[in-house]
Each structure stands twice: as structure tokens, then as C-alpha cells.
Image 1 (cartoon, rainbow, N blue to C red):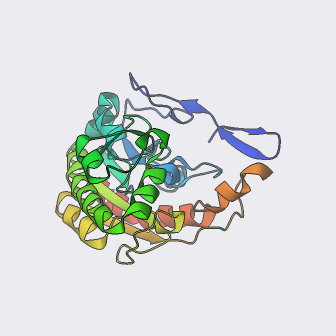
Image 2 (spheres, helix red, strand yellow; image 1 turned 135 degrees about the vertical axis):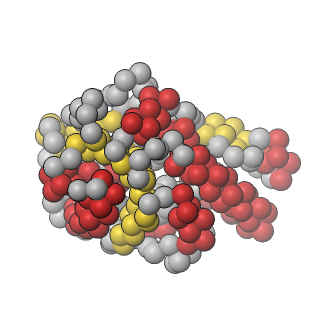
Length: 273
């Protein structure tokens, strides 16, 4: 993985793009004119502060080209709005999708930015009617929005949360359908799917996703791989001192090594090698 080390010991991966996609991914660009595995996901797949994120580790381990399409804070919408990425999924020998949270997607209550899914764009009339006392003009991110909705009225928020979960399942089914080869879901988090929590703290990522939601997708994929790892271990990570708190909130090198190990055999089996 070609990277640049900047003052303070930070790791700045070389950005790259694919086809006509408007998205920027972690480089260097991998060849897509032959057989390859596509990895879709959010911040963990991108691997900020990680010298070799799990797609790189898998490429080394099994000798297959691995295309890292991780996009920071991505929900399913960012990939469903990008036809170039959908084409890559269609042509891939296999696809791995890191399971995202259920907050970063457009839904009947609010809209998110099509490429920065953690950016709150605007409420719908339905949300304004449900929360008439809330001023949405001061809210820019989905995390802030969710926190405010819960703080104002936790009971009304249940209505929003339930709709988010239903929308997430439908949107994930649509994303999975873009792949023609074997598709694997990767649960890479600090909690197990059955450990439910209503919070949006990093330790509860992917927010609001439950075991039932994951199981609803199982019939559409080849396998669901679960990797539970602790956050806060920054050994082997590269980051400037001012970003230490951000690094502590992410999964570390050990988590990426565990993900690569867990995915190795299912991918080899799916590829028929």
C-alpha cells in the first residue's frame, strides 16, 4: 500500500478513483481489467490510520486483486448513487460489504448527502410534523440529529428508529443485488449483533443494526462473517497527536488482521480456489 507519512507520524493514503465515479478511495488504484474482489464499506474498510487495512491483508494472503472501495462514514446510499461502483460490483469475482449503520441513509424522515452519507441535508415534512418544536437549521450531521431527536422525546424517536431500520434492510437488499458473484457481509464492530443499544457512540457501531436485520439479509448473500474487536487499541496505528481521540474511537490493527483471517477461507471457497 503506497502511503505518505506526514509530520507527526500520520499516515495519508494516496487517493484514487475508479472510472467515472465522483468518489475518492484509498489508493493506490488496483487493476479492474481482470479478476478482482470488491470491498464496500465505511471508515473501517477505508482504514484511516491503519497501515494495511483488511482488503490489503487479504490480497497478500490469497493472491487475488482486492479493490478497496471503503468510503468514510458511508451508508448504502453512497454506493447506490454511483453507477461506476455498481459496475465494479457487477463485474467483481466476489464482493464483501462491511455492514454500515442504519442512520446514514435517506429515509421518509430526513435526507442525507448522496456522497457524504453522514451529512444531514434536510428533514422531510413527516419529521417536521413529528417534531414541530425542533429547529433543524442548526443540525449538519446525522449523529447530531439522532442525539437531538432522542433528547427531545425518546418515545417519538422510536417511530423514527423503526423506519430507519426498515429502510436500511430494503436499501441493503438493493445494494447486494448489484453483485453477480458471491457476496459476503462483514460485521466488523466492537459489539455482537445481538447486543442491542440505542446509542450512536462508536462502541455501538453499526448504530441501530440488530441481529434480526442482519438475518433478514442472509438469504441474499453467500455468508455473513462476524468479527468482534475492541476499540481503543492504537498499537500499530499512525496518527498525529491531535487526532489521538479519533484514532481511539476506531478499530485497530488487530481488528483488521482478525477480519482478514475470518474472510480468507469463505472468499477462497466462494471463488472456487
